[in-house]
Length: 305
Ligand SMILES: [Zn+2]
Image (cartoon, rainbow, N blue to C red; front, side, top):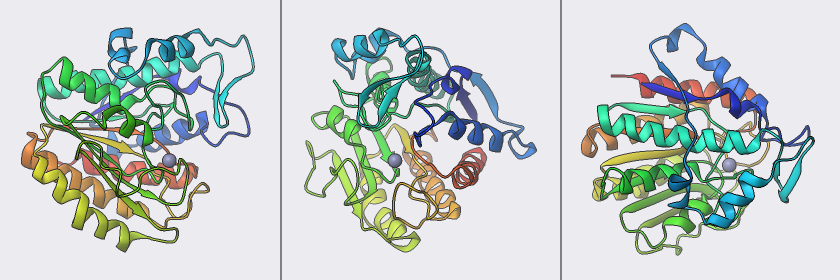
């Protein structure tokens, strides 16, 4: 299993009051710096190119991110999305990690986890929002289609927030199947079941207070069967860990064992249809201990033969 990250991803610093902080990635990397993960192949993420970003973002959006270089302190792009001097480089490395993972996994097979930030799934074609600058997982799906000629790419998003940006980018792209479990009502207030795109969007809203049972029933009963029927050639995962019961931003009640469970189910989809090819990327997760424990469960399953 490959692990992509870059020290630049620690240099994106939205400020002391922001839950999406460098401490999150430090907690993740510390959890993975353990004998249990000694066999992981650690790879430094390259920068995404302009051509790779242009597949999912407008030129104006890319220029805005790359040209917003505060000398110090931060610049606010929207209510909860800020940039510091290191943010543009971090965003390029985060998206670039996914592109490199696609090239490696489609070339040599296997699985990968991208321990990167800023996260991506709220970023729309032309807007940064919800802590996200570039839509990393969307850049990966578009790269798999454009550079490798894939015809069916599935994106499974189990972050507690709806991946509105990923949905926006692909709602008219039938080569991508986007499936999401998320709490409703909750930011960004999208993700109703009747948002179906071109038949390629499958939203599974959960209610505040729902936990392991409802989460597993949703994936087992609705989302995983749709994934299997699609027969993806590559499985991408927007892995947010903020549906954990201890997360401060939401009200679902998952435990770290639920992340092991969903990971094993998604691995099974990849094994059945995609020659095992699966790439996961970090989205949310704001309780540092819950995040570290849940990522360790997730990566532990990804490492299994
Ligand atoms: Zn989230």
